[in-house]
Length: 354
Image 1 (tube, rainbow, N blue to C red):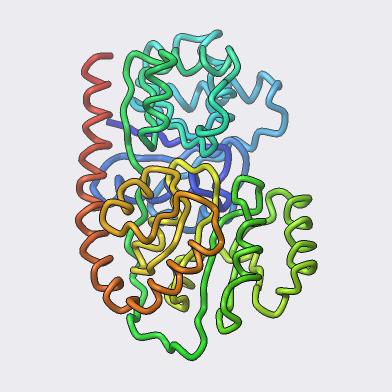
Image 2 (cartoon, rainbow, N blue to C red; image 1 turned 90 degrees about the vertical axis):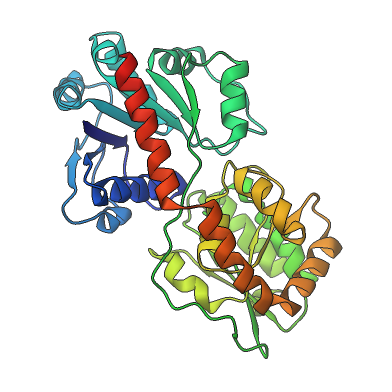
C-alpha cells in the first residue's frame, strides 16, 4: 500500500502539524508514505523523519495546466491519496473532472476546518469535490455530524487529532514566586484574543502571560497590540511570533489558556496535555468534550472573566496533583497505537471496496 499525504505547504498550523505527526507515525511503523506539497518548502518540513520522501510541486499559477499534468503524474503512482485542507481539495479536484483518478485510486479528504460551529455552509463546487472522494474524514464529531447531515459522502469516518509526546523534561514543581501562563494560537479573529486581553487586565499582577502565534492576519494582530496598549498590560504580556517548536517551550509554564470561539480540536489543548500542563479553555472542540468529563474546571462554558480567573487560581493551587493526573489521562485517551490502528483500518476498508 503506497500512501501519499497531500497539503499545500507545511507552514506552522494545526492541520500541518497533524500531517507531520501522522506521516512520521506511519513511517515509523513501516508504511510506505510520501508527502506532496503543492507549493514549496516551509518551516515544518524539518520535523518530518529524514527518510520520508517529500515532493514539491512548486505551483505558481493554479490555473496553469502544466502543474495539473504534473500533479496527475504523481498521484497515479499511489494507492491511497490522503488530502488535507479544503483549499487543497479544491485544487486537486480539478483532476476529478478531466481524468478518472478519483475512480481508480482511494482518495481521502481529511477535514480540519476549525470554524464549523459558526460557518456551516460551503460552495457547491467544494461539496461536489467532497462527494467525488472515496471518503470524508473529519477530525471531530462536529465535522462528521455536519458531513452526515449534508450528505457529503457515502463513506464518513472520524480520525481525531493527535499530538506526539515530546521527549522534554516536565516539572511539577515550578517556582510559584512568578506564575507564567501561556496561550498558543496563530493571530486570526477566531482565536478571540480580545477576551484574553480582558482576562489579563483583570488577573493577578503576579501572573506573566506569553502568546505564541504566527502573524497570519496582520490587521488582527495590530488590533490586539493596540488593545494591549489601551488596557495598559504591556508589562504582563509578551508575544512570540517566530517560534518553530512551541511544544519544547511549554514546560516553562504553569498553566495554559485557549480562548478560541470555534475549534475542531483544539490541537493546542492536546499539546498542553502531552506536556502535562493544566489549562483553561472554552468549551469548543473534540478535546474540550473529552477533558471536561474528567477535569470540569478546565473547560469554560462562557466568557465571564471572573469565572475564568477563579478557575485559573484554583487550578494553580492544585497544579502538582493535576500534572500527575494528566500523564495517565493523556496516555489512555490519546495513544499513538490506537491512532495508527484507526488510520490503517480506514485505508484498508476503502481499498477493499475500491
